Image (cartoon, rainbow, N blue to C red; front, side, top):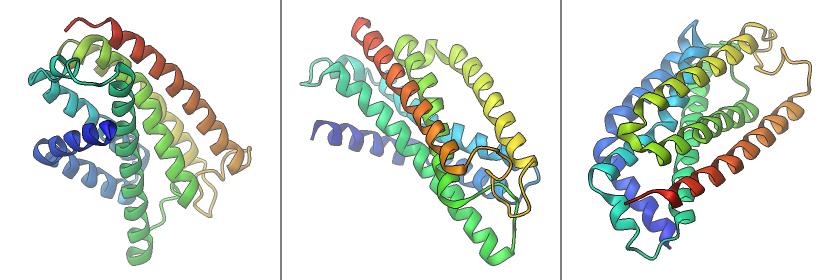
Length: 219
């Protein structure tokens, strides 16, 4: 119930302040389907989705939510876990949106850009959001949104560049059937499982770091 209450609080913040960001995410998702530079817009959409949690934390910081949270019956672990869950939900929503845009483009516009394959690409995009969250949240918990803005921007620029380069390489080497994984020598299931395993490990390490950092914060 406590986790549900925190998620509901953040959902209200999304509804009030996140509409413009949501519009940009939707626009980039549509552009990604029709653009020749699809990997850039795909990665940018996922990055924006993962950054929605930063928007929430910025307003929490402004309203001194952290100071109030320590007076509530909430454990530090619960506060940290809720932000990771929120970030993953946002990443999953963006991945789903990209899949819907791709389906519409294929069905009604006969558009094949060689980038998406249904389930595996959804999972890859979702895991991509997990990678971003594993870097983003420890920085935000350590420095806060205001002080950590520069560090976070630099870290995300490097991470987004690496992700865009990887996706571009796979996309450009795609096979005629239009599968993202056709260019990879490893079987599709092995690649997806490997990506999932790496992401889960990084998230587990990231959560432990964030919890340790949060417990040391002064309010």
